[in-house]
Amino acid sequence: MSLQKFLTRVAIIFSLGILSLQANADAAPDFTLQSNSGENVRLAEARGKVVMLNFWATWCAPCRKEMPLLDAMYQRYSSAGFVIYGINVEEDSEGAKKLIKDMKVTFPVLFDIESKASSLYEVDAMPTTVLIDKKGQVRYVHRGYKAGDENIYRDKIRELIKE
Figure 1 (cartoon, helix red, strand yellow):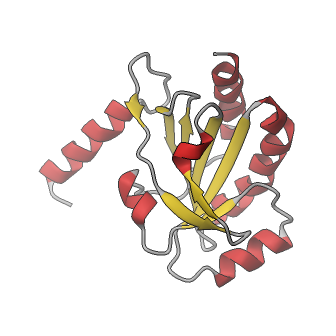
Figure 2 (cartoon, one colour):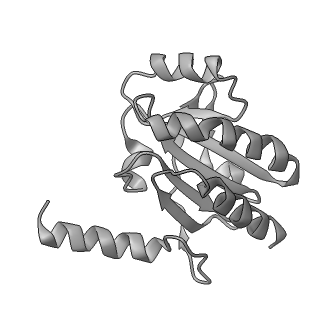
């Protein structure tokens, strides 16, 4: 990767507000993807809710590790106006379908087989987690996962729900 490309990515990441909530956030790019239920899901239809996008892949060990933690958050906060869309980024969704069935994931999983949403959100790490406020603004972006990150997510979710 060239230095210019790297600096451009750093500037974009910074502008999205990594590890911080922004007062003047960027509008979350809209997309429509097919879900594990077979329905098409459009992000804009979740306006009025706090939305977490979690971009993941079956080959990503940290993704698999955080999935049950995300599911617990979904179950706990969904009644308060919170939704998670797990977005599988692989071209073949069969492995993802098996994994979410085996792990008994209850939140909607979307399949980004053509990398449309991944491109819009410039996903370059697995997992990548994006929090969007009720007004449809990107408020938090986190790349990767390590034990304890779920506590940060919970704090941000609670803060956004209260707004």
